[in-house]
Length: 356
Image (cartoon, rainbow, N blue to C red; front, side, top):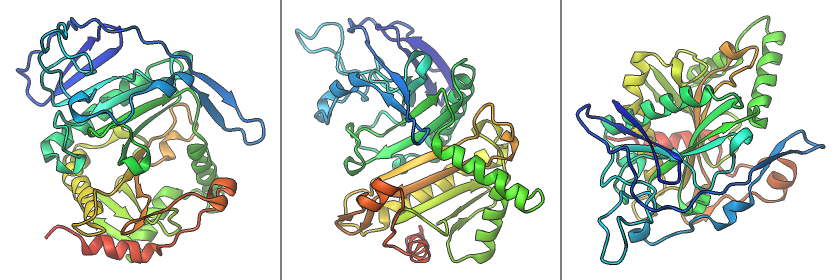
């Protein structure tokens, strides 16, 4: 992997990740770009203890542009009267493998953290599941590198790499991409995991909750989706979503940086297979399955950081052909989920659509 860091004309950082070492990237952006103005504030909910990011500038973010005005595609040569280069693109290069840049419409900024966009491919019509294993490995390398770099920022407490896919999820740009949030606090979901981890350790005389969950699921077998040499994927016993898979390295590590060579080498094949199964869940006539794919990493200053288990949680809001799972009163009002699809049935279906 070759990494080239540069600055856009508006001073935001942009990093190219290339699979070939002989690629030469221009470190200048000649386009006249408008300065980026962000206003992000973190407020605390006094009743729940949650944090909420107030980011009013995001009201003007790009919303479902046509394909020929996609801001994540490579820059095309300027047409007569357009100036130096097409200005709609965030990426000044005419082609790229993987690109990461500071989000123009960041939810977190300054002391409130940082948000980055990760473009998985220059191909506007490709999804992550369409990538080659080499390309998926390059994305993993970019995730690891950004985790390391963002963890060095003084205000950052937790690094979150994720992908939202599909308009049904709320994605406003169709080009295959993900995001990285560097939070200045421990997120509520992670805090609850840490509380459960500590309680389990106390209750069992020192046992690790994550280890026990993975061991129990593999021993039970009914909800196992993929059982590879270095990774395990299963539908959790109390799945919140119609089709939800938790994806763990078999050797517990706290974050992406700690993944061993063997796990990194096996990841592209197993993860791509998992995504392709999601796209086959509802039959060939259904549009691509909308999903959220989220890496859970240990907070940087957690006292029991080594006890945390890196894992990825993948889920879709599509519950059956042509029907979505909406969060209604119980879920949105009380955070009590009601799942229409038994986890055992979801796992069985994900095994049925395995690649032959």
